[in-house]
Length: 91
Image (cartoon, rainbow, N blue to C red; front, side, top):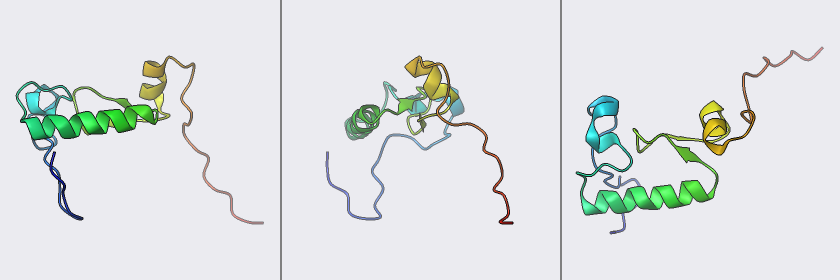
């Protein structure tokens, strides 16, 4: 894996939304991506999984924490957050 300087995008294999959910390159475990992209996706998975995020497997860039999808995959009874009440004006 090569280093990228500030402001330089690392190649993760395929553009986001290229082919939608059915586009093979969009899947986290896509078989047809290059070695460098595979390494970056594996790094992303290791780091985000260790910090409690869950991946939406048909989109390598889509990670969740605390929402309904996260709760479902983590097998917890409810999401950590939901809709918020609008802030109240000071009286």
